[in-house]
Amino acid sequence: MKKAARLLVIVFCIPFFCYLFMEKDGIVPKEQPAASTAGFTVKVEEDTGEFTYDPEEILPRIMKAMLSGRGDEAMYRVAAVICRTNLVYTWQQEGRPDEIRLTSTGLCSCKRETYHKSEEAEKLKSAAADTVGIVLTYEGKVIPAPFFYLSAGRTRNAMEVYGDDRFPYLQSVDCSDDMQQEEFLTLYDYPKDEFYQKLRMIAGFENVRELSELELEREQTGYVHDIYYKKENMLLPIQDICDSFDLCSPWFEWEERAQSVTIRCKGAGHGVGFDVNYGELLEKQGMDESQILEYFYKDVTLDKRYNAAAKPD
Image 1 (tube, rainbow, N blue to C red):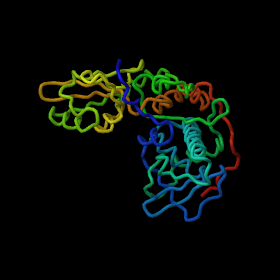
Image 2 (cartoon, rainbow, N blue to C red):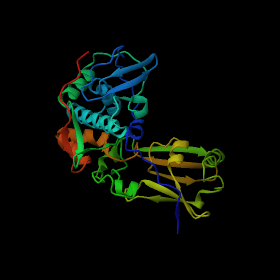
Image 3 (tube, one colour):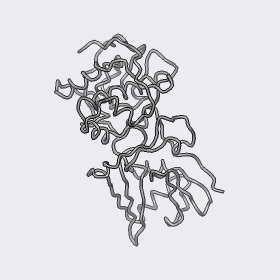
């Protein structure tokens, strides 16, 4: 029997699924916190200090980081609901404190920049106002709503990722048109000595001499879940591999040649939940925000948890 060292950790809370979208929007920090409309405030560490915001006030900045320039009005409303849901979920998971810290959520960069009154910024703020207080729930509870940039052809099934049914709304859905995107395939080429030097620095891989000793164990969607180390008869997690080699996706394959090793990655991001690229395609096909959200998050409800919008700048 193979021994599971540990499962690939995919955190559905905010840290994991937002680090891919670190583009900055640059809302000017305020010295005084806005009055909270959600029951809590968000503290952001900027390069010049710490500043406090109402969740609705910081939301457009987070939305911009998530979308990375993708989509239009329906997608802006989708992003508003997803990002707000994750803020509220984090607040609840942390015991409903008066304040949560953006550095602990990883939702957006904390570098201070000047906010420009661009058309995009105004649309993002309008989408946040149009959906104020609305979050995603499943069976009455606010959910973690993971998102990522580009799938490997399908999103992943949470049952396969976690091995249990904690997140039944996260099912695998078709995103095959993602395969037509220029960013779909990424290649990493390493001289063999450099590859093995990096590999052997990872815990569990210290004694690997050739790739034939390792077997990539895949989910039905093709994403790698574990690596089976035949010599030691044990499963090794892939997260350290992804981190050490800076892979853009856990859907990968590798090939060893005489002098080099090539790693091929499909997609961008962890592959669980909302696919930003495919969501934009669904918007272009005429779906509204509710239909887009329901495509990726099965049997969820849009639930309005509070009413008042944050005061404008």
